[in-house]
Length: 527
Image (cartoon, rainbow, N blue to C red):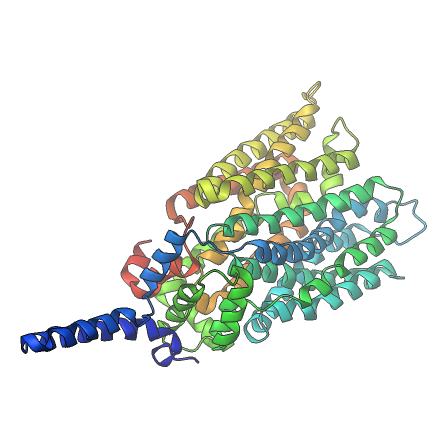
């Protein structure tokens, strides 16, 4: 691992340390006699004329005075490439909720799924995502974010082709599982890459674009459901969408923070110049990264070393908190509703066509995510999470009340309630859930962010699989109204835990967020 103490990036500090000695030398020299005054003036003039490399704080101050800010064009380009990958992931996640009515139609001349196969088809994507998270950890540490995506993308395309051409149910389910594996890798990797290349003032907005793109994938599949396409044709269309970002991905550099963990500082410097622009002084940012890594006692280019770092007191309590919140997010109803969207609207007997309702459902979430983009870097992450999930809790409670009244025959003239509450719920999920994705990466140190993000994604996919697979069983045991009241309780718990335990990260660099955790363990424990 690169030793910062011997690196070239401490030249500013060493220069500053030498300057007081020069000044003292000048003062001693001038006190000898009057004849040496001229020599002293010459020496001081020489010191002033010699270009000195400013310290980190001085460099940043000069940048602010000159009005030079990092370019965002290349950051936006990289984010849009990641967004295309998220669109592909969104189509995979929403595919089952839109195509299940065709696959469970007894009159179909194509493949037919029984009740058990239906539960697997709706949940195997999340189960595959669980495997994908386990695989992504070693890949992210060893290969980096960009190469991991380049390896995963062809497998995603092949999985879609296999699904669309499946002659048997078992191949259909197998293809769905492999697709889930690649989606699990893609979602965590794209978020991580965007988080690490974004400048601190736009990090929340750019990360929000990733969430918006995944919802756009939901909307795209919902739109296909209204068309005359069958599920096989939808699979071919989704396959084409998945192949789009490959060539753009080739032109992007690796994440500079991953390069620093590998000791490849010259490449990290070039990557920062690519993302910040050649007129911006990115050296202070690189110094922060190298200093952060130097504060870690162990090497960070090894998988098991990063795993050990997760269990150190400086990070363990935060990992535990994020894991609990991530699991609760999967139990709040958003994943189950997405997996069984059309059947849920059919059961509630909404006033609109279920497929049209599914399109509106996705559009509303897009609007919520657009609001998220506008306010996350102004209001902060924590207020968005607490307010959004509190209102989601009320919506799920109201939906459950309607379903209870519908069951007892007292819901006459109230057909507008399920669609309205579902739309409000999805609107605030679009605002609050992307903030969780941002904070999951921000609150983990660079030294173990690769494996930490994979662990949180593992928790997300395990919870999503449980929520999706057990939804039919939960409905049978608690009734539809009891299931939605359970969702309401999960949202209320998220709100409470977020208010009590989550810190705010707005406007701080990744190294600033986690730097105090590495340098001051007592302060971290108090947080």
